[in-house]
Image (cartoon, rainbow, N blue to C red; front, side, top):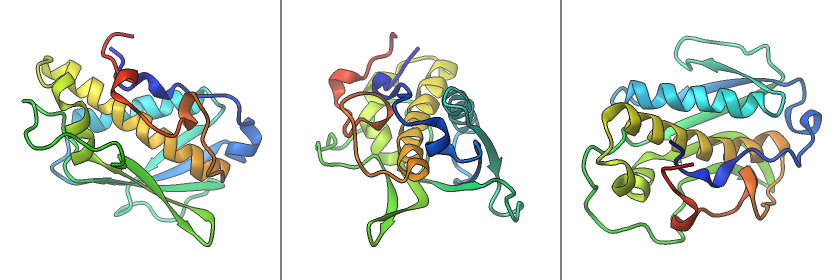
Length: 182
């Protein structure tokens, strides 16, 4: 299954320029209510994506781990409850301007603080995954989380705010570019 296929890693950004030493410490801030399976799938997919551009992620717990030896550092916050919807979510569909993820910017500089809005993601893909068996639902949701986080990592690690027409640096996701079979 491939959910949110819009974000295959683009190698247009040089490995050295994007990753420095290639070692990236990721401090993950998540809720206790988050799906362990979906977050595990997200981490596994992020590891694959970063490995494909020559990077290695070191997942850290902000409550336990102190001091990162890696040259690069990213703080990733999963906002809301990150759990694949078990039923089609009610409420209004997302507007095109709704941001699913973002990174902090100060005085034009991209800071290493990124977040994913899990409630918005659930509304965006909920109808597509709600009827899947639990393992496939967690896989698809975790993969979607990873693709959103990878887009933000592109900005943070490359220190670029520009977007491309395709790949991980694509500016927007539309429903036409999402699919379960790819």
